[in-house]
Image 1 (cartoon, rainbow, N blue to C red):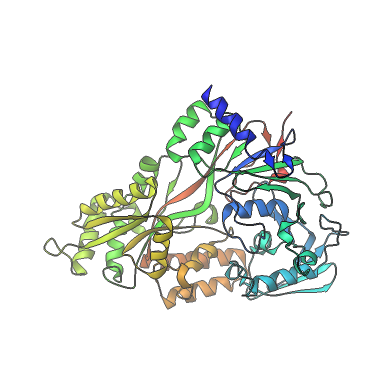
Image 2: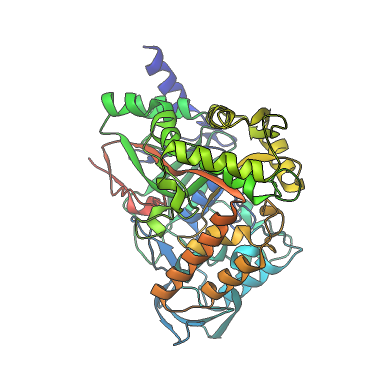
Length: 511
């Protein structure tokens, strides 16, 4: 009875508005987000919750389909130059924004210019650095010139920051275009109503080139507690939750197997060594700790949610299901411990002079367990590691300043491309290169891979760059993430995929 009452309360949240009651239309698809959206302008937001909602409303030359793959969006086709550095897109005929204004090729050149305008404050400037320029020779043609070959360009252009934006509203004087209701959009939906911290209600864009989406009405609701989100879906208060607690995996699979959706994900969990100062400016010390870290146990027993242990950086799905593993990964524990002790001794550490440092992590039971487990494993070779916990903003501020010994980190890919993982660790990557790693040989290997247009040769060169990185071990990979979602059986069209992208226009509610 109590759970039913909570569900009713949740369904009624946000019903009141300044104009009276706002009722959710019958047949609406209700999706839960981990947090409230931080804004509506897709060029000014970078958090996942905001990007998901932006992708429902804004479409670019390409878009993501239900399988998480990039496909033709506002462009109906494209052609690639022999060297792979120029792409010519042809727009679909008679494209319109939701307010009936035409969508013309020049909006994409404007979109890139706005991203690169420092005054605009877009956080996506570096993401689109591979693009040299965008030109519009006429209203129906878009030419994208690249700095080097980039096979993942369709996925990059599907990011809502490079979507067709209503510049006729954005550039109008004395207009706050994001306050428009309905919001002027180019994708399958348009925002009708936003009750802060309660719900965002969207309806079908009547001018969308794809016609009527499978679900006409859509509601996004922020629920920052994933346990609460899980309970709401189980009680029928929502159709989809984008996460659930990892420690509930076995219970959910036993009692609610029809709702559990889990898949490999383009994300890697690791800790970063601070290579700028002792003791981790010495690669021998970093390798020693990496060798005695039992990733298999951590992934399969400690987490026990379907994660795969990681010895390299790029997830299996980006490496033809053959993630990188150094030779020592296959050694028995005794051999790895013996080699680790030898490396530490060569670096000047001994029982009389033990290696001591702090392991920093941000507040989370998952991060605490990982740090404590590693400290226990390292103790077996005479290493003394103290744990240091801090809240998230302080933690990542410390990482950016280089104020740590070893710290919890990780990477969730913006694109399904190995370079998206590898480029973070270049010497010129800036503050996001938390470890401070700088190896000219690695930079050169990555540059060579980026310049390669042939997909097979490119993948092989990316692999060689990754081998250099893992050989130097500026980071300690532990496991690859999996995406976790709860989806009501009444939802049709959901496809598990490594990008963890599930556009609302591809989903329907069965009668």
